Length: 389
Image (cartoon, rainbow, N blue to C red; front, side, top):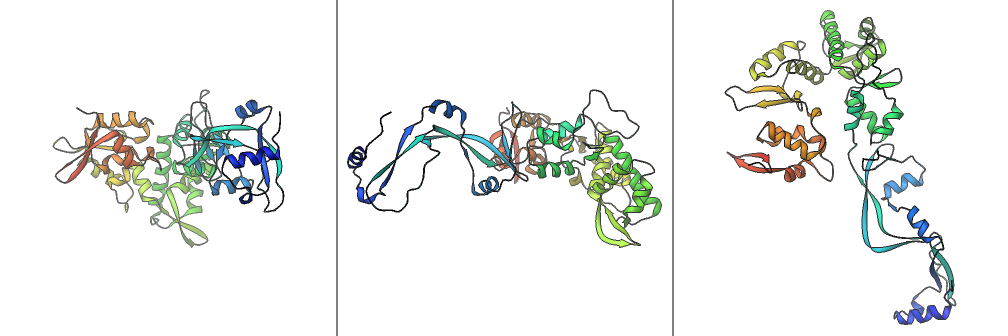
């Protein structure tokens, strides 16, 4: 390939109406490399902001995650980013040896550089919520049913590394997700307790508190764990206590005092009641629920957010079991189901059932604009299906 000469470069500067004295004397002449096409197919450009660039420069861990049918995400140790393709009308040339010329003076010199590839698209990363829906699905495959239950041959238990390979989130977000789901680390694997077994364990806790007449905010942790370990495996019971109790940062006779997490306990007892019925009047449910929880705990419907549906069309309001975890992950499909079971919703009514779909790009308000129609009646805003008749 013939290379440009200094005189040819000077002629090009004149044609471009550029004054040579305004430019640095070193000119980098670009030529396409012999393996240009092969490199172009093998290289992908990734745009990083300052924070992510620092992660890479410091040699911290960053991983691309996603099954073949999922859009990829980039995960650091504590954050998740959506990876998407961006197209530009500009031509981006990748020149590995290009340099910033020095501020020197002198005669014009030429340095020949090779262009290894040309791009009109690149990958950009945008912060997004951790995609924890799959975590719940994976843990459902093999719930922990107690030491007396045998594991089914078709079920599978997952350790932390396997979950990281399958779930699109950072390690810290995964661990937070496991805690929020009440998952237990049992013999090297992460499992959520089967619902009836969980209720059995929590009943052990509340029964013990009542028998010992411990105040709900003064439960001696080690003493409780020693007693409860006679009924269930200690490692399981300890994690159940950690989920349903919280420390008071006080001690009595060398034992740390903990308080019963009222909202979590009330939610579990309320779910037991409503799950076992096909619906009941709200007044009947409130009375049964209040009588079922430990004395000293107060129940309110806010504790059952995302679990119940209130039918106000009849004379007496009817409450039914309607868990948001059973709804489809696709936004369009979910809205269709929501507007099928109930024609119109207030914002506070529908939010618990679509909150998990929102992110920084599509918050709940945007989802409602896209999939619902708003109207106001008697000063109250209602949402109905966008394509409702």
